[in-house]
Amino acid sequence: MSHTGSSGGQPGPQRTTDRATALSEPTRAYAELVAGNRRFVDGAPRHPNQDAGHRAAVADGQHPFAVIVGCSDSRLAAEIIFDRGLGDLFVVRTAGHTAGPEVLGSVEYAVTVLGTPLVVVLGHDSCGAVQAARESAATGTAPSGHLRAVVDAVLPSLRRAASEGVDDIDGIVDIHIAQTVETLLGQSPVLADEVALGRCAVVGVSYRLAAGAVRPVAAVPAGFATVETPASAESTDPAAPATV
Ligand SMILES: [Zn+2]
Image (cartoon, rainbow, N blue to C red; front, side):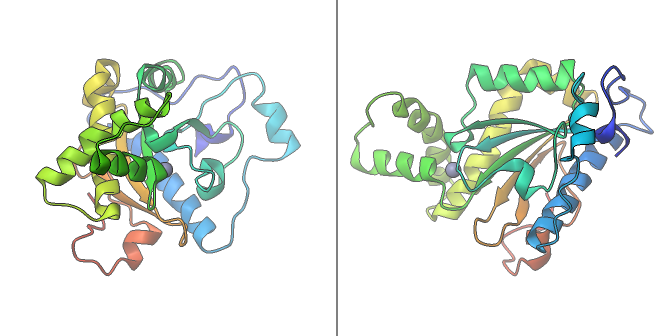
């Protein structure tokens, strides 16, 4: 991508609402992430943009091509699993990718000030935050300290899963990812406006810890994430859509 290697002082990605080019930047950004994830899954990472020359080139300014709103899980390091480097990804991580005001503000900063054309919610199987919320709901006990804020932020996803008859942990995780996508758009009119104008897209992807592959589970605008991912290519579960 032309803007991934740009140096400081250059303008950000071209901003346009022209119908012919609407979503081209988000589409290229998503394809770049999927390509990096495929290299990671295949054990052939290129570690782009991690050399001293690039470090110096981006010191004066950043133009990341994607915002990652991911879980803090130590096995979910964004630059590693998407095989990217310095200046590529604007990463916000909280346990269970819960999205409070500081997260929303960080996303808005990246999208409006830096001109980042793609927001990715990154969840994963065996998510401890989702399991903690499930445990809390099952026992009727709230965790102590600020962990309660994390659990409380996941509970709406558990209620949605229950209403949809989903009770397996991976299914609940997928719903929580989709719920986070909706939370970002519902709580941030700034982000929703950027998406409505075609300058940005929001995608929720689920990562599998053992395989290392991501699979899209939600996207706005609908049908945006049509690039085949390593996980969707290998999926044999008819209930798991390859694209959304
Ligand atoms: Zn997690």
